[in-house]
Image (cartoon, rainbow, N blue to C red; front, side, top):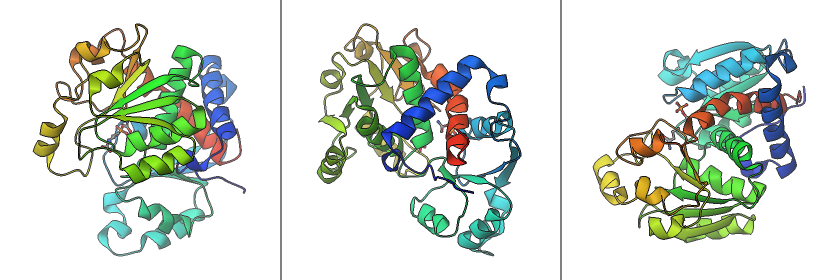
Length: 304
Ligand code: CP
Ligand code: NVA
């Protein structure tokens, strides 16, 4: 079977990414009957080495709604987690059982170890480096709300983390302006900014959140302490002026929306007033994980 990995947005053509978004929107509008045998007979394994709610639910349902068989693996009770088998041998064995693997891990280097063995597509369900499936749902949500992601003005507020990095990759592929407002010590490095700009990412870095938020159409944030981060108190102290609240939303365009990949820590990076308010698209964004996951899965196994 020919297949494609879905590991990072910067490794996939703009044409393919757009096809995934358009398919997700079309399938969502047309309903289940339009695609419920799209991947019939194929199998997906999901493997989580970090907690998950949305990614777990959406991949489980996505596979089933495409007519796939699903195996949800419990990393903690597998031999590789107990040092009894290598991750590489685990991957090699999976080739014989399933047609795709979705994997959430703590270390991006593990993708390379897996890819050396896999003859089936690998889907990145989040690593310390990036979270591409999330940003595809975010782009889908922006497309539904504004017609296109192209030429939008997007603000990322918070530390430069895995989710922020995938937003940068998306800026280059979908053609939008991305502002990043981060405190000293938690921002993108100059070297990474140069590398990203060379790929076409339209990124602008700020320290002042209010200045960065002026006239943006999308305000986007994430928890101050990601899974695996240490020094929670120091992070909260450094990020305390980077909360998305009503005052910050008022700096943005009148029709601006608020995005958050969730889970949210209410009262830290966002107030309940904003998360539950009329400008919040976070719940639509969460639902879109399901729709976009289906299109990503189908793309990976050449059934799009
Ligand atoms: N946004 C996201 O990936 O959520 P989960 O960690 O719950 O999967
Ligand atoms: N940056 C967060 C995203 C969670 C979906 C984390 O890695 O924990």
